[in-house]
Amino acid sequence: MNTREVVNRYYELANAGDWDAWCDLFAAGQVMDEQLAGHVEGRETLRNMMKGFPGMYARFQNVPRHIVVDGDQAAVVSHISATTPAGGTVEADVVNYYRVVDGLITYMANFHDTVPFRAVLSND
Image 1: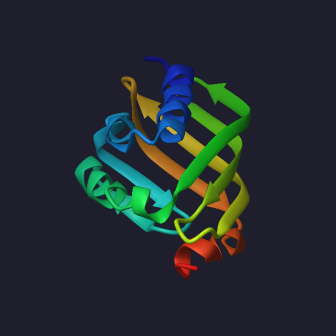
Image 2: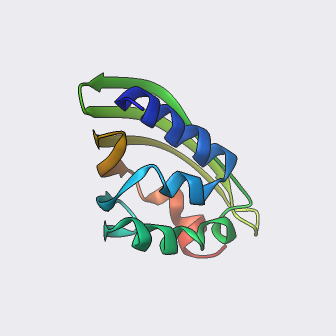
Image 3: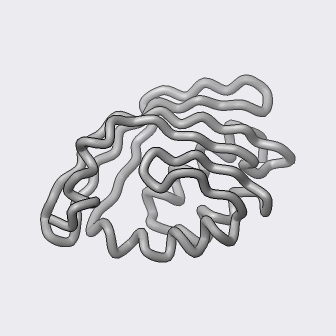
């Protein structure tokens, strides 16, 4: 897959809740700087982290609004709408940066306001 296809697939799998296949989009030695989870290295570390994700959200959608691709790099402005199992809501605009090599994400960083995620972090 080229960079655009990888990025599109990232959102398709996230919105389908297919976190195992989503993790397969990342290189074995991937590095992620995630606004809430911090610095994450390695695909299997990411896979183990994502096992708990379905318990955090009863509903999760991350909808791209604007995608820019330049060779092996991409930036995406998206909007997350989510609901916790307890009924808390999350509405947040997000920017993700990707570096894709040989059809796999080698680096990703995301940037967003953390306040909308209080419902998830406090388990309300």
